[in-house]
Length: 476
Image 1 (tube, helix red, strand yellow):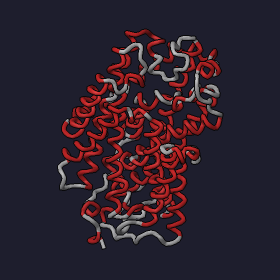
Image 2 (spheres, one colour):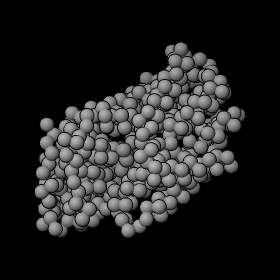
Image 3 (cartoon, rainbow, N blue to C red):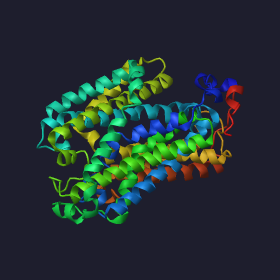
Image 4 (cartoon, rainbow, N blue to C red):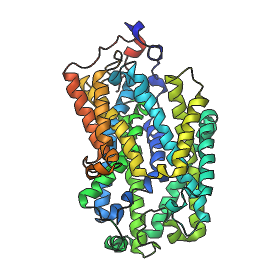
């Protein structure tokens, strides 16, 4: 009966079809803004600091790996959540009750989404503070600037301001957030024009030879590291496709929004970052022969003054994402912990963000994105399996904790986080590369295990829905 539903499910109201907007006014521009955030594209060429980075096997291999990763993000991680949102008009924390149950849905994916936002706030504060401080340390790299006293002070202020604005002033941030992604877009284009002349002359052997330690990545290694990085960065945003999809009019909006805003924007921003690095090295302008970070190379391409201005502008453009992370976390906690003041929950989370930023832990992007991918890879996988088993529709809320969803998430998370955990201990370091492309492996495990367990009868019963929820909007 509908009366068995918790209030947060029973009271949910779908977004009416009359209130939906085209893909280019919602999904595409929002996702594109995320992909233009410098935190994404600046580390596409670095490949975790390996000799030659993602360009160790040449520009062509890196570009193909980026295209594959971008398409996987669209088709595996975003498309089903987006279609579920469009078909139901409901947000992720309601749609997720099918995969995880009406009680379990409180925690997964809603509460988990809120928790992980503080990881994003930490990453944002860490790198934005580094960009603001770096011009005062012209002889240091970004990584060397991180955790210096000025960086710590700026990171604390940045995270606190982002959290406060996310709680109280998000409406003001939203008014300018639509235009701020134009800043990194323009800077990327300028950097490409300043370096494109050297692309044809780029020789990956030169930065590899300049490296004193480490082994360059093989072709498969380049593919694996790009897929791990790009998918891990995107995993939470993929599940959030439900919240974008519920504002789309039809399936075409969902598809085009993802193809342009996700796959297209990833290929554009990440591809330009690869071209900039290759071009700078091909022109012989890389003052540090091993440097594969395009934002560091801004100084070499355009000088200290212009490079400093670019860094300030990129940091300013990164402030709205910091606010939105706190805003999403606050909304998650208001839903799952309605009796707790969000200033308390967001305040505690912000302290964690500050610790991650100030210590430099948030700068270890491969590790950070591995955790995110391990957390939400199995969520996206389980949602995809649930969607297909239900006949390409939302199955409806399920009772309690849905065993198929929770077991698939636990096993998927273990698989996705295995390499990272194994690398922490000397006795297990030999196994730290055992799982190929952990975020993708986590998705596959989540999908397969949910499908098998559901077929074995390990789904909790579907609860009767109120008429407002059962009336599914058309996708035509």
